[in-house]
Every structure is written in C-alpha cells, then in structure tokens.
Image 1 (cartoon, rainbow, N blue to C red):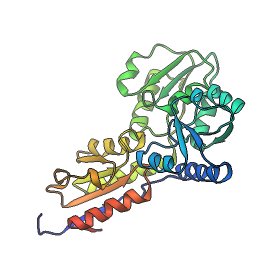
Image 2: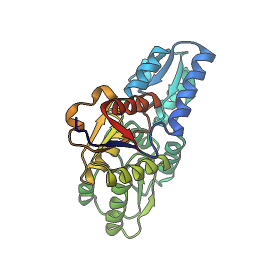
Image 3: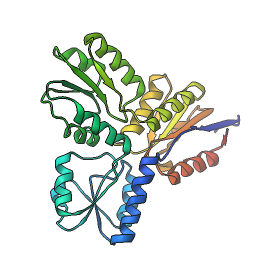
Length: 287
C-alpha cells in the first residue's frame, strides 16, 4: 500500500429508506404477534443479507402466492403485488401489507389510466414492482419501456400516459420524458420515482465528482443499488457493487486515493459499518 494519505467519503444519503425500515418493523411485529412462520411473497426487500437474517427470525419466502398455505400469516413485500395476488392472499390468509407508500401511489396512477388511453411504463424488465403495477392497468394498450432505444418502436398514440417505476434513475427518466414528449404532444407524465431514490442518486453524483473510486453496497439483484453503480460509471468513475466488505479485493482499491462509499435503499447499517471498518483497517481515513 502507498504511504500517502488516503481517504474515504461516505455518501450523505445511503442505506435503508423509510419504506424498508417500515417493512422490516412490520415483519418483526408479525413474528411477535402471530409467532413463526411468517410467509413472505418473494423477498420483503432486495437484499440477501436482510433476507437471510429474516429467515433466521422465522420468515418463509414463497415464489408465488399458491405456495403459501391457507390460514398462514402472509406478508406483501415493499415492491407490492397485483390486485389479483393480493385478493387471493386476503381470501385465505392473514395479510400484512408492507407495500411502499410510493409504490402504492404508482399503483393508483396506473389504475387511473383510462381504458381508451395508452400506458407507457418506464421500468426495469421483469421487476416485481413493475409486474405488480401492471396488474392495476385497465387499458390493453400497455407499452413497457426499459431504455431510450425502446422509444422508436412505440406506435402512434392518441392519448398516452407515461408512468415511471420508483427506482429508475432520474437521469434516464428525464431523458425518456423528453424523448417521448417530442413524439407525443398530448403526453401526460406522472413520475413515480421516490424522493429517497432521487436523494441517493444525487448524493452519489457528488461522490463521483470528487472520488476516483466508488463502492456501492447492495445485492446484485437490488434495482436501486445497481442504478447507483450505473450512475457513477456514467460519470466516468470506476464503481463496484459489493455485498459486504468480504467482496472487496485489492484490485478495487489499487491506485485509489479517495474512495466513495454509498449503499442501496435496502442495505442495512451493519453492512455499511462493516465496509467503513474495512477501509480504515486498509489504511483509509474517513473524510
């Protein structure tokens, strides 16, 4: 290691958002009130460490609603589900709904799209939040968009509405809004990006402007954590998505005098503290 002074800078906003903290608190309350097991459809949040911790405390994760037995205590995760899935669970189980309020607002917007209108949904492909939102749509004219390149393939529309998944990057959302607006003069836009996602994205941009390396703590299947890494890379700075300090190798830090650290909205404080300790032991000083 170099003898020169090296430092790390923590993002101003990182780690659990309010919706994730609420979902985990609801799970703990459910275990205390109803006992084990508490069934959870998919994951409560997209973080492997959190999922493993919850499993140890009494969670049983199900891939589909039919895997949850009648009479069970069932939780709907923070990403929400379709009305059909929720109705099935409520008809058979004691249901605890931990859907993020921002996701619920997006579901409400999707439901308000008229049957004669066209819905353009900017989202991550096959993401559970997007799949749940699509279950609220009445119109058969639905066009998922995952990138700017998808816009050219959109057909002519008479009354289009553009909605956005909560964890899409604000930069992509702005670019898609502008491109779709140019195609459809009567476009109605309702951005679903949550304030927590925007705050994290803006904070990581500031890290990218002063650091020569950025570590993003989060699981590989966490949409918002992946987005933070992509934002850093789009600004010409090397970024690595890591599960914990155990994922850090020498190559990630080689030649880096200033390392930025951020974390996805589903990353617990323990993992953030763990990475901070690792960097200090490696020779970095906190800024």
